Length: 454
Image (cartoon, rainbow, N blue to C red):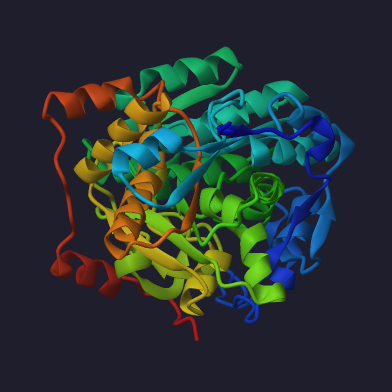
């Protein structure tokens, strides 16, 4: 009998996060102070983050214990299931075995609460009363709103304007959990007002929303800032996904040849891949890892490795990363969670060292893959997740052409129930592809007036 779903019990929820910094052959370069351009210390980050998260950000310990209170919260939705996609394999007529780890069963419908709960907990323990953040499509804002409500904190969310307009029900979900949500750029901050003065019709960007959230946080000692991706501690919190998946692949009697995940800032990709990448780094395995990004925001596939700001205004530390430049304003594609100009430091270093790969996909190709997947497996994927599915389709068809069996694992990071307007637009032919020209990319990169990452 075919086994479609591999389930773990609560005792299998990881009790530690895996920190890949311990096993990387080349450690990332240090972040730099935005003013002095010198390496920053913990005291420079203290206005933004609680000290325990700062310690995790710079830690090189292989495993860090997950607090009991965080484990208790995880039990609301973890462990998440691993599925064998038999119907999708049949539809693609491929000899490949396709597995997917499904993170859509969390309270906010994506992988984001894995770090939101942890960050809210550490803020609560340090006496913080309010957390500010940005969100693109709303998955992160929803997750942090839930986490803040869980631990009794106030939450203030700056949502990229185009997504604020496209995805109104994400705002309703955040409001339900008590969060205050503002379209970014807003008139509540100097950063937002400056952007609006230049372009009153700005669609916004994650970089702009980050600037607004940080500005609000540094104005009040009882307020801290929280980021849903990019930073080392955020990527580490997500490794509960991959640690569970390792056990589940062992239950299935398989081990992946290829692991695929969507890529925005890195947390989605890191969460699934890092525990498997550990096998390459410490056991000599030869698993491939592919980060799937939009062709309209191709920082990994067409960006440059350089120190750059994480926000538009230049308030964050300078990070050594693949970037399109902090002034980049992406096309308003529906995969709002992937519309970020830069990539996490750890993932950037891994790509630089050729330990992982990256692939870019057009919007229509992704929606086509997502619809096929929904027809075969019954789950409507978030637009972000369709990028991984598009890569899986490529690899499955390649396996068919080569007549080779291979095992493919992907992260189905969330459902698309709040993205029905995007699917409606796709079915009505209102969506289009967008790819940046070489001239556009060269202009953006030339405008990055920051130190080289060497």
